[in-house]
Length: 332
Image (tube, rainbow, N blue to C red; front, side, top):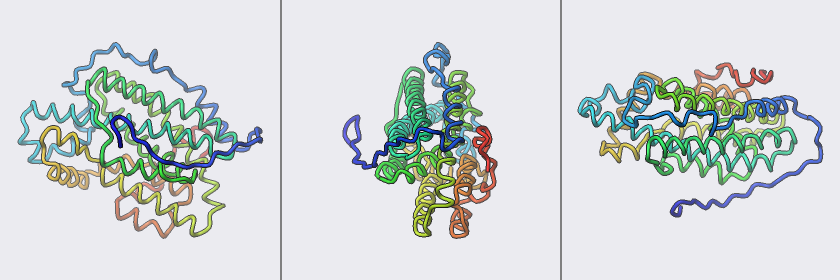
């Protein structure tokens, strides 16, 4: 990984189709919805809003990187100034990871647009590329204009990027990005919207999570029929294992290690304190509410996998209603 860039070797076959008629009405409806809901980040967000980087930008009760430490000796030993610094560094770390994730999504969504075999998916995929570019724009602007600092891609998430970027099969890229990561992002962005006390950030998350809901629906709708009807047992097992590996890594490694290091906090002790508090409160798991249900919807949560998801605490979400599908009249 060079300075400022990361060269990744990827191979995904491009497919052109000469069938322009509507073949997947739900995807075409999603495309129409995407066109209606486009927004201009430059003119529709209040960038003139003053932001105090040392103020309470996120509600401590909802912000997991604060809430999950507040009952620990680590927090109690910190001075008010150090607690303010923790809020700032973890917010900046979070938004920086979102920024880098949006670039991943630009790249993978463009690959999917070229690789999927249906015109309806290609049309919608093109709108997602624009959406992800806009998301990268707004996170970059907020980080640099309002917070003044950016963290690089975290070691804890780089491996997830590699899993998706190195995969050549388009349906597994769909599964990794559109179902697992977009499902988790939708949960995270909804929590951040609820936690945001600062008006610009709250409005930013309002628009971004609106887009993410469509992206998540795109993945579920695209894979639902394929995975239900067209997989051999071996192919299904491979995709079940791939999805579970992503979920297990995301479940256990979403810690702001680099932010803790910047402040000088003990990383292992912070991780343990957050993990203990998360097990008591289930706060971290709440971001996965859509993911397990989506995997069940597309046929990747059979009896073979249920004990594994139960072990990491995610099986309880298997019947969460997916309003994102209902919004395009596509609920199963």
